[in-house]
Length: 252
Ligand SMILES: C[S@@+](CC[C@H](N)C(=O)[O-])C[C@H]1O[C@@H](n2cnc3c(N)ncnc32)[C@H](O)[C@@H]1O
View 1 (cartoon, rainbow, N blue to C red):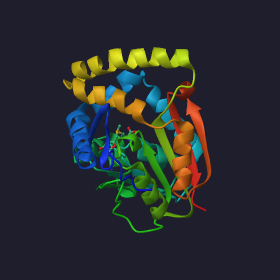
View 2: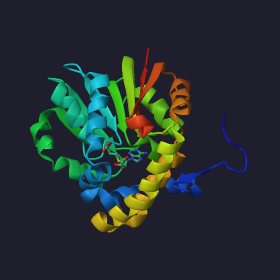
View 3: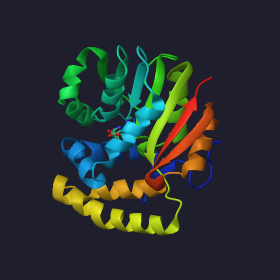
């Protein structure tokens, strides 16, 4: 349903309310600013755990030989590289709206190793530059919470998947246990923006990161959004007690 009330055309950028037309530019600014230190910061902030979460995504996805993957908001290529490593003769496209992130990805050793099976495309999750029914698998890892209108991104995922294709989303989620959540919030708000300042010289981008995590819908609400986009057999699995979650859905 279209919102025609006082919040029409408004959205969140972290804890700030902004116009929908402003958000993509602000998000682009964040990732252009941190691109050169993005991979290092992921390891520092999570103590390397983001690698385990991405491996868990691959375990559930179980890539098969010859499949074609679209990894949206693919940034520096972590998901596409993992997919190609596991599936002989598979191909992948990394699509991201921030060219600086793709540039960093193309510099990585895996990019060279998989050059003949991998493309890098600048594009928006809400208007993907690909034909209908052209991929077997759609992934988005730590990307969807940055998208201005999430239902539009999910509809695009549905459109570009072949019948029988699968969507998998890795995203920060909600820690159900109150005490654990309080400890996690305290760590995130106290440590991550300071770490961002020290490593990238950009505190604000990491303040945005921790705020945007709290704005994202919880596991069940997000699962309902995936169903509303047309996906079947929608299921999720919590990772690290719900700090992150994997959501899976099928286009049947
Ligand atoms: C936190 S990074 C995730 C990168 C990578 N997927 C990973 O898991 O490490 C988020 C990425 O989402 C991209 N992004 C944000 N909004 C987007 C949109 N509407 N369309 C395409 N990419 C978007 C950003 O440019 C950024 O590279």
